[in-house]
Image (cartoon, rainbow, N blue to C red; front, top):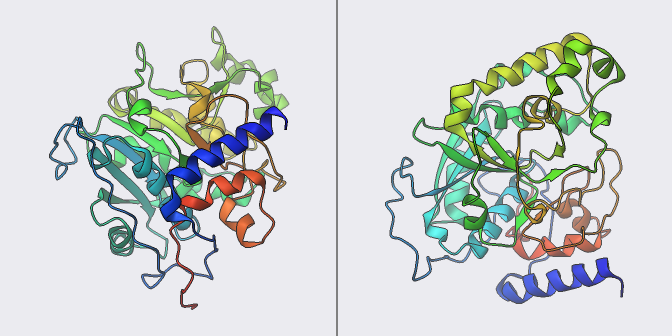
Length: 352
């Protein structure tokens, strides 16, 4: 057995042992998500003996762990699995506050989302926010994959505006992740100096490929990296200092690059390049274990990939392939078996 196979087997053993109560056959949604769509109610996860007793009724409690995620009908099943994984492995699950961002044009309004989440996680502390797609619709340029062009995909750039001013720090998570470690460990990562975001960096990746030849030839563009050593990072898992974000007006800085993109076409990959342009070379590097990304293949092919060597705290199915769809098609990749135990979708659903 090679090292990758051993890594997959060991993680599967740990996850499945911890989740014997939750061995669920994965199924995809039959169509539009409605309130009648049924999920299993998650187990009620309680704080450990050493956890502080916090007032979770106030979003402004600075001792809470704040997590932001977008939520829509397409990725709802993934979001539910991600929440489940966070709670299952958290040392103090009752001290986590979730911020769910939904679009003003989705079939899931705030009442739908709230009722659905509450039915699955009755004790969860959360709030639902509405993202006005008009804020970004005219700034979006087509990319190499249609899913990357959805306005809600850009909501992460507006968290500082959407969330209350008292929320000065948040962990942003994509909907296609599974956390297999205590989220408190990620929350405790300190961002040095004036850094605004922290994320795992991948400095061996070819950074130049994320931008066009014109970008690198035009000094007015490429000079943004003068004096820096930028590395690729994935925006699906970020620790964000929202207070510093607001002070630096970083939303507007991202928008300016999107405006340039509309005129000059300097990149091809959706919401990621503006983050690279604004923060590349000034990111707090977090351990790679917190984003084992690329498990969904690349952005064109739904291909199988193995885990990177080393310890794993978070699995991320970035790319075209999603674990629930591959499991439903009965053509899963080996790593998809690590997602299945967190799936809370019922099978006796009614199709509309």
